[in-house]
Image 1 (cartoon, each protein chain N blue to C red):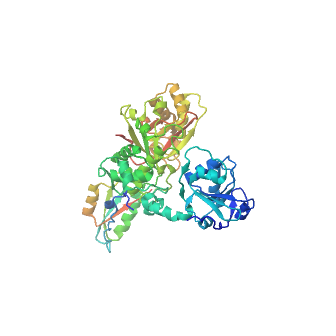
Image 2: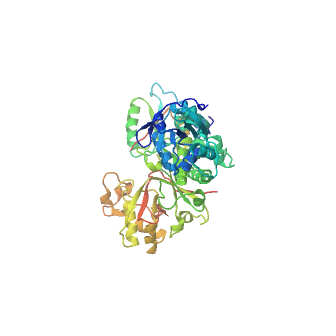
Image 3: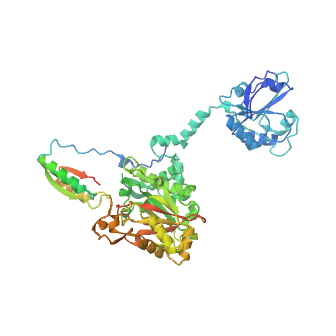
Length: 90
Length: 490
């Protein structure tokens, strides 16, 4: 039977995640604070652990947890970091 | 072919609608017997039974149906005579070679078929049954296929193939859990009513599927909308896709909030929206389906399906869809859209984000100020008991009797907003329990903290039935930096 789909096929195309690095040693790790309550505390712990593994850390923040990160912020992180870790907290 | 004249009538023994069972032998004990085969879904059979009701005709009706269906047929038609129940697989009908109903067979005392009449044929049946059945038209009317001649299950399956199978929609996942209407090209075209199907309202968060009008119309069909509802659906969708509404945050949050459409202006009548008794539902197609179409747009086109990208911990029943019309004709105040700068005669939809409505029963307040305070204090625990101020727009629905009390005391809508705002305050020290705001944390113990940052955070509409002092307030959607968005319905 022929139906009119409510879906947009373009939005349903799966996107492959980037390959995971074997090691964080010598890599640059971006830590993104989404401005959720106590997210910075969580990232402080992550930063300490990641530095122990030999990574450089850069901290980023988006203004409001409930809105997507801006394209500009995503591009900035992608240009500078090998890995990004985003914190969700409360 | 029906059993031929002069051949032996096949025997049967069937349950009667009243009690007990009756066999052909029983019927023939007193001489010749007349048997009329009917179904419970045939208009001609209903006609025949209505005409027979109240006559002295001695006819035994055999109804192709389950017992309940046969009993309902007797009740509908007023037929009080003997009715036997012939459930699937309709062995007796098959034995009699039945093709159509009604079919009346007269069986002679010796058990042989004497005569057969197919359909409603008043002159023939009058003669056959020996009783005048009147001369009211229609004197003759063909009937329906006997159930024994087709496979009802297969028929239903075939119909499903024609696009009316809710199960197919469930298999596709095009549902919010309730049955949906299949969006066939014909239905979608009717919904669009000549609009450009490829026109786009933009991407729908969180999955960013593009809301073409055709996809929006598919959602409207799925939701059960009629074409006259679509203008409201389209304006609402346009409003909620405005970035300042932050549909993205609302669609993925663990909060229970959904989207609430408030409709003002003449389109309320054109769309058949209910602003009166039971205005928050259920009961009215327009309210139920317009709100549902918007939620299906978020869940399907936007990929914000609950349990997937929609991470709401509990959800809320209003999230199936919530569309409220303001009862402007009954309101003593300017309606919401006029407050928001639109002409009184314009049709406007305003989108809010919100949780389920909380009912506020208030029958005893002596003054408008007391009533305003009661409405406000009922809202004091919204979001969390110690979360002051809420920091989000809050929508109150004021019932007509409450509106009369407030306006009768001379309060304008702004006065009511301010009265609510002024009344609901607590000292910061009393709020420092569990979860509280940064403002409360920073304030001196005795500093009064209001529940809202400003009266402007309080939106008021009037809706509901004439009787009853029950208003409501929608729980707010907090922390999303959203603002109500209005769009004109064109």
